[in-house]
Image (tube, rainbow over all chains, first blue to last red; front, side, top):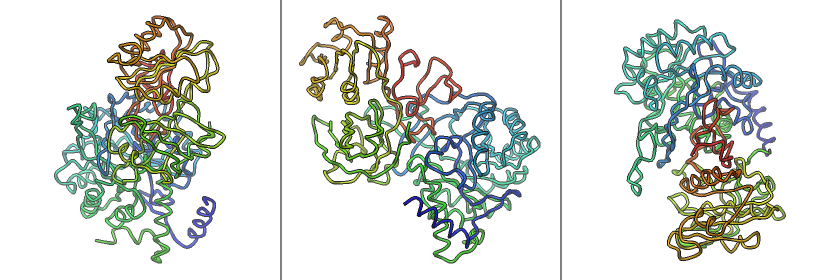
Amino acid sequence: MKDNNIKGNNEINKDICMKVNIAGIEFKNPVTTASGTFGSGMEYSDYVDLSRLGAVTTKGVSITAWYGNPTPRIAETYGGMLNAIGLQNPGVDVFIQRDLPFLKTYDTKIIVNVVGKTAKEYCQVVDRLSDCDVDMLEINISCPNVKEGGIAFGQDPKRVEEITSLVKSHSRKPIIIKLSPNVTDIATIAKAAEAGGADAISLINTLTGMKIDIERRTFLLANKIGGLSGPAIKPIAVRMVYQAANAVKIPIIGMGGIMEACDALEFIMAGATMVAVGTANFINPRATEEVIEGIEDYMVRNNIKDVNDLIACVR
Amino acid sequence: MSVAIKKSIKVLQNIRIEEGVYDLRLEAGDMAMDASPGQFISLYCDDGGRLLPRPISICEIDKETGNIRLVYRVVGNGTREFAGLKQGELIDCIGPLGKGFTLEGKKALIIGGGIGIPPLLELAKQLKCEKSIVLGFRDVTFLDKDFESYGKVYISTEDGSVGTKGNVIDAIKANNLEADIIYACGPTPMLKGVKEYAGSNNIRAQLSLEERMACGIGACLACVCKSTEVDHHTNVNNKRICKEGPVFYADDIVL
């Protein structure tokens, strides 16, 4: 059955264009992975042909290995999940030595998510990765689960502009600034990233949330507060992508609760050039490929030749 | 090791064997062929609002029929939904996942506590050496009869209603049980006790751990435990329970 699907898609591909372009980089289709939900692709390569993806966006990479938060690190909530992983990662050296060569064996673009506790740490990672064969860097100024760095940079327009221009000055790769939804006005933050020189923005990261275990009368997460993701947050994410798209000229990578192609199409129509599949990977390891196939089916069904014709079409 | 598969499988039986404890038999096919004791299967809820699959350790594997037995406790809305599964219905599953027990030793002590007991049944069946089985319960026992064909069973209950009054360590001491290998699964306080007992008696021990999981395949880093050494994958002192575990050597982890 899988063979038939692939054959069917190859036939479809002859007639429609799924290619999108961000900062001069051409992606074979508009679907990538949301940082932190896909590791560096290795675990999912058993389920998904990574070469089918427009890009793989990696889990956040820091200058040294990070341990992450105590467990429990996740809690399910209705229609979503809270996580407080705390950006655990093996550090940029292991990423470059182990994970990057693995990803390079596939025909896909590589977007590396960058995290740091200080502005200097972001720049150190960006410096290292600028010498590597990666396509774009996504600067995570929106993680709600770490005490330093992360969201601390992402909630004040002045700091967003500062960190963006600082990172941009260190980077020899195009940069994406990943924005937090935990702000009063997303348009202002998006404009600040653009003013700082961002080549693109991605949104939304998770919304901060909490779950309480009423039997044990305590917090479900060891970190007490976590980031909410999954279909529960999709309407908020679509709204914010729409508002950001109206505020800036740089391309947008939209995400937040995409489970299937129809969700991805909402983001594209709201103004996203690319979309990222996140929490859905945990539920269905093949979610990314199925989203791509679903977008293609939609285009064939509606006689749309170029996916770019759908971007921001509801303006 | 073969790749876990996600598919819909048929429920052959789902009966209550004790208050809040259910015995689920699934027509698992290939999943059963690939499964080994100590591995788990993640079951999906039918209610789309409950997104994450629920990891449940495998209780018994029948490679001839391709059937798998899971014994689980109702602990929340997801497992409550599973309790309502009826014969002939389909359920989405992914598995087998994780790394199970390594069969070794000449004289084994199999130690289970509460809902940690079921995954030890297939182990007890496959383990060919001399073995003593120690099962700890709060009060009411379950599954203990199933173990009797595979070794001498010793029971501890907190209230003393059956077997030794106290915990599994009390039962081991009361019966002067000896071993060169320990296999254990149960609540973390029990595993801590077993780890300490194994350490002070210089016995090698394999412990099966539990943690809240999201992906189940090693990508999300939700279900980690502390490790004694820097782990080769994470490059820090923790290991993924769903991938390098759920079974670990006691010396390799910190509880």
